[in-house]
Image (cartoon, rainbow, N blue to C red):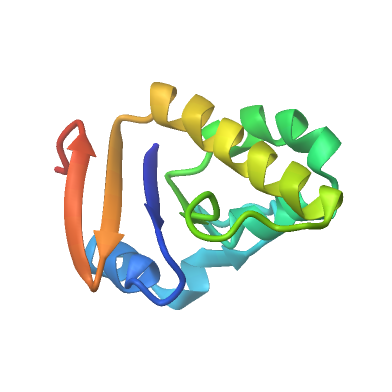
Length: 117
């Protein structure tokens, strides 16, 4: 599995397309049979207390794309803070098991773990 993380609009999906995936291969925040999922953070924010239940299913994907949500201003709302914490912890778990981790900044990929074939 390849984990791609980065800020909103940083080029994560464009990078996944450069790996040979098409838009039709990408599921928008839902678990289905497509090999790529993006907006993983939205799934977590729906039920932060259940984020751990997504882990095994996400490991089965070829590519998991997630917005980084841990930088910046800390939200005042407890639910938002819980969601942010859950996204971060899930990404830590996924990164530990991923074959490769790529961080996108301004459309530029930085491979921070593994190698891309």
